[in-house]
Length: 149
Length: 241
Image (cartoon, rainbow over all chains, first blue to last red):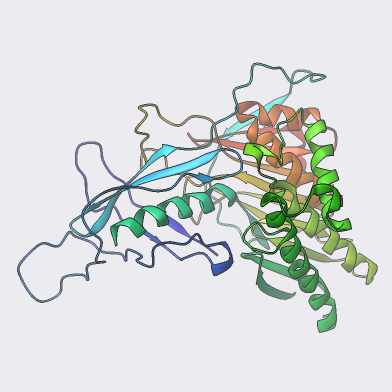
């Protein structure tokens, strides 16, 4: 299963924001990067030898990934490499609601409830979760990273 | 519980059976079917009928019976959802919005024909369950926080499908200058995985109004999470919690 972790970036500073993920299996993988950033806790660039984390070999710069069909719309991301590491990922395009003005006919007013989502710790037999757009995100990001390596 | 998992169609496919373990052939029949579906319908396989249709080498009218069936289901779903389900976006034929759900439902039928009554078939988070007594407990993923479950539902004979994306609010900003609004994920519970999948696909494309559409269709329940972590859900969801 794929897992996508995106560390936070504050507005005021760019910390080392790292994305780690497992690459998609070959049958769904877009042609592209073999370089995958590994977790690291601090930027390098220092001169001391010892225990700095390995660089991914990515060239600094800003790279725009391809626009990938996520079925509900396109996903396109821009990857920022700084200090040889992926430090930021920006959405250039993402699926939005279609925004049609046409009303859905034969549709009475819905009766709905709402709540804030809360983490549950119970045991389950299976998990249901979205996957479509995250594949497109992975594809677009990979194509951006492939330009940096 | 006896579970077998294979990676097919680029996705994790699991068949879980409670009670006496059936023969390997029962599991293999399902996985063979998934491989077959993959060969016919995968947009990533250069020789699948879907790829050949999109390359102009095969007309839809000349597709094999199974693919013709899928085309028909896509047309029917398009009509039932006022075009919000659309397998022909951008001039490309892409039936993936209902293929997963249909494959799961067909596999579930195979298991029923084998006499099984207590099982779960899952492909990458969409699933169908059967039970005569003990419900299956299904966790709903938090679309805003990887690895977290934010809802647990108990279902006996139903399908579940989730459409959406993974985002963390405030962690990815939009260079277009606006915060992303709208739906992060929409889970639909229906009588089987096919119904859940096709309507989750369509309703997600409707944006905020998706959950209202689910509410308006008998036999469907929905749980829609927006990008701020607020969930809106249909009244019938409470019977599953």
